[in-house]
Image (tube, rainbow, N blue to C red; front, side, top):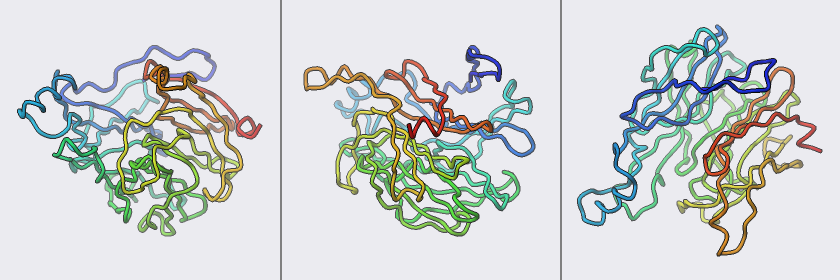
Length: 321
C-alpha cells in the first residue's frame, strides 16, 4: 500500500500488507466504514508454488497433471482492518470462504444504511483445452449490521458476467455493470429492492475485452464508467482471452447506461499496428475510479505491461471537454 497525503505531490514508499506466500493474493479494494475503520478486502487463491507456467504446460503435455495453471477456483476473500487510516493493519481473517470466492470492487453503503458487496465465483475447468472460467457467475453480499453478518443473493443468468460494479442511482434502485468473459460488450443489470433481486444482465453499447471495469455515481448524478474500449468478438456464449487491453476510456451516462454522450481516452497506449509490430503494444488495464469530497475524480490503472501503477486526478468537466 502507498499513500498520497493531502498536501503532498509524492506517493509514499509502498508498504507490505499482504504476506501469505502460499497463495496468490490480488484484487484489493479499500472501504472506509462509518465508524472510521478502513477495510481491506482481497482474494487469496492457492498457487502452483514455484512452478512456472511453462513448467506446468510441459507437465500437462506429459500427462502428469490436468487442468489449468491458474487456481482461481480455490480462492477466498480475506479482510484486514485499520483503525488509524491505514498506517497499521490487523491480521488477515477469512471473510468469504466458499471456494472460488472473488472480489474486485469495494463495499457500497446504500441509502437504507445496508452495505452491499459485489462478488463472483470462479469455477474450475478440468479440461485444459477449454478456456478458463467460462462458468463464473456473480452474486452480491448484503449486510444490515455493518459487516458482522452477510446474506448472499445470486444474480440470475450471470454466467460469464463478472467484476460486478454496483451504483445506487436513486433510493433502492441499483444498476450494475459487468465485465464479460465473452469479450463482446459491457453488461448491465438492475435491482429495485436494494439488491435482493436482479434482472438478467444484458449487453449495452460499450465494447469489452474480458478485462476489468469500474463504475461510480458522481456528485452531479452522472455515472462514470472506466474500461478498455475494445472488444474481441460478438458471441455472448463464448469465452475469449488475450484481447488487447488498451485504450482506457472514461465514459459518462445520465440515463443509467442507455447512452454515453461523453467518452474520453485517458490512456491511448503505445499505438503500434500491423502483424509485425502489434506485439510491441503493452497492456493498460484494471482501472479504478473514485471521487473525493472536493469533486476531483481519481483514476488508477496498471501501466505499460504491469510495470507500475498510473495515477490521474481529473474532473468531470475535463471528461466532457
